Image (cartoon, rainbow, N blue to C red; front, side, top):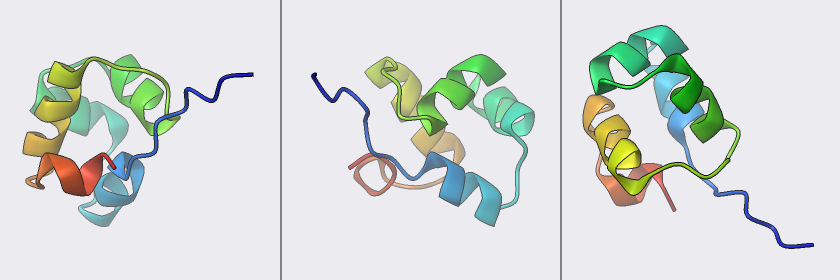
Length: 65
């Protein structure tokens, strides 16, 4: 079985701020469903990941390892 779960720190940073999933989605210009997928480690577009990192005010590399 291929492990396609992507490790990231979206939830950790979001909860530290604190922001709800909906608030982060609004700041990033994405849907809450996309944020939820991201937090579960499911595959999302790089452009979406860049938007989330910017909304969290963190470097991409710090959020998505």
